[in-house]
Length: 143
Image (cartoon, rainbow, N blue to C red; front, side):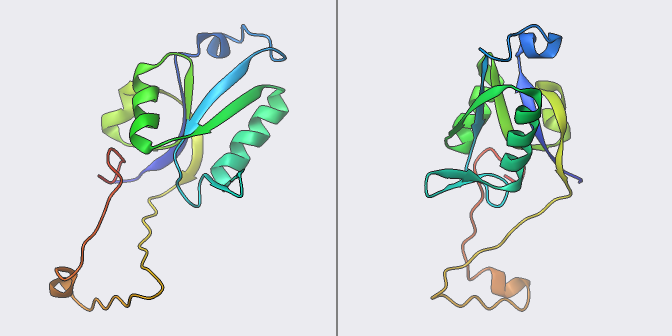
């Protein structure tokens, strides 16, 4: 399965038709903390998806308001609220018809495994995996 991370926009008819005042319109953009794509550090937004968003909106002379929230809430807003844009979502066949997709941020599927610095994880085979707990973000393309 190839997954492409994208910006998508839901029901921003004015943007899609080019009928809005770039000086007065502020686009609502929602994202969840998803390192290294988009995250907050010392009250500043960071990540390469954020950098792309910022640069595209700057070039288009459009203002935006980025809000960080849980992924479940971001995804729900994208599905059910008008005039919402979501930054960073896995494009999979089940979601294809749900959104107006804009463009890729990154191609490929990157899954990261983390551990606490003070914990040693030793996995040599599948049997060893049974000794550990794993988590996934509810509602994500990997869930």
